[in-house]
Image (cartoon, rainbow, N blue to C red; front, side, top):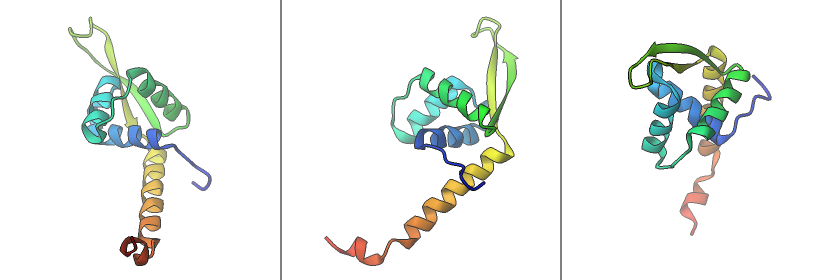
Length: 110
């Protein structure tokens, strides 16, 4: 996985897909990001990232059931691939390592 970098927003979208598990589609991801981060994000920004993450092989998508509210159209649902899970864990491990490596004096100094 060396050399696999994702941006912060890509990371947040991957995490939202994981949080939503079997109900991760565009609008639900937007709502989850708002709930978790307090950020207002646009549906189009989320869709762009979902497409990019799917091209990178970190997500896969499938058609969910059609609903009356959607005019009979299927939802496009997303799940993390094993590669996507590895990438998120890699980011988490790197962040935790860096946090743990900050000398105590940094936090004690004014």
